[in-house]
Length: 241
Image (cartoon, rainbow, N blue to C red; front, side, top):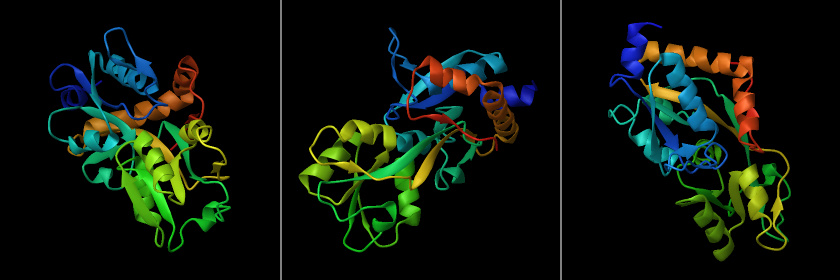
């Protein structure tokens, strides 16, 4: 372990890890002290252990808020979805886990497949600034995105405003589909949200260390063990880079 890597990733002597609380697959609870618990916090702790420094978890309500603090001496590593917009300021590893993102439609909807969604007049409810919202922004050409702050609020807006489609992570939609009669989740996926580890762009040595760590964590079975430890359904180990 080079001093340069430690100086870049733990300049205060502590690894400050930004954690996105809104991802219920990666943060599954809180400890007695109120710290986030789950796959992402455990990944951060494993990285800190490899660096030989303590870990401090810095919670954020959304991935967008976490990304906004890149390079501002708030966090040293951030565990969020790797998206092109975020990569302008953050150097990301390859994904360590993946989550399917798909659509849900109301009863009687003429939309029968993912290919039917991107059409004029179709309104898609989506949690603002989520990783899949960023994908939709880059790829939807004809439908209209209706951005709402938060997962629950997006679902309520979808129902209350009688929108055509709700975009979301499949595990979350599987819970939502039980809340109203006739809702249907479409087969397949429009993207797989890839959760990665990032650090501020100037940290080149730190970024190289993180990239190697993530590949080793996937290959060694560490990521799979963390998923099993927290009993998370809908999360899978990402393929090798």
